[in-house]
Amino acid sequence: SQNTTAEQMKMFLTRIGFGSTVVVTGDMTQIDLPSKTQSGLRHAIRVLGAVEGISFTHFGARDVVRHPLVQRIVEAYQIHEDGR
Image (cartoon, rainbow, N blue to C red; front, side):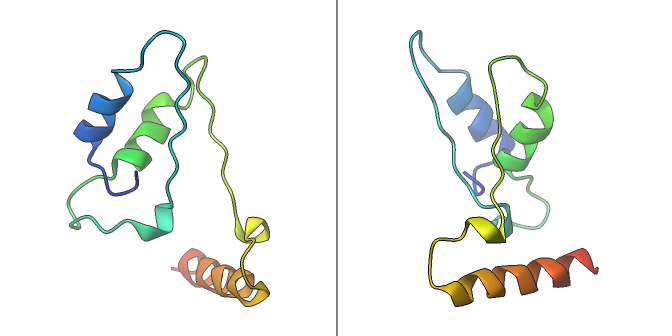
């Protein structure tokens, strides 16, 4: 979902039917859109953050369930990006 546009994400989310449950997953660190194109995931989090019935769960380096080295790699990149 991180590579959807804001328009695509809106189109998807506005088609939720009665009795439906929607789970949207994505990784904000893996957005591959052109530099001037806004991520639909990032836009949805900003626009829908206070909407009743919608919740967001953010995972970090401590949630990595791959090789232990991956957790340290994720942490190193986060420290680097936070330092910008």
